[in-house]
Image (cartoon, rainbow, N blue to C red; front, side):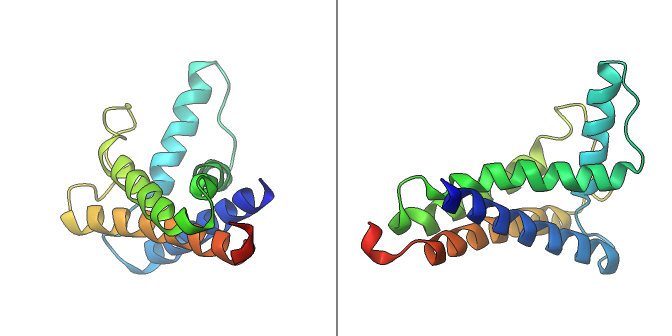
Length: 145
């Protein structure tokens, strides 16, 4: 269990590092931080609670926690399945990040119309899944299978 959670944290940190670095240097970079801030604000206002300030930092913490838990599923099936699981998890998360915000009432990403932005989104979530898989394989010895 700890290996899975630790691996999920590695994947989430890799994803967040990519997102936070790229948004500063790439004009059409995905802005999942903006979508996260909208989700927090919308949820909190729905229960008559004022969103926290600064909202960006709260969104980053929320992303790290939720992505860590999601990527921790990389350990399902054991060490030999980790790479496949990580790739599938990353692909699913990336596609969800591209296609779900608007139907969930979170609007579009600020640069959501650009196909390059969508491709980067999927690629970066995939990278997070692969990082989680690599961590899980590193945390697990071959003789545990």
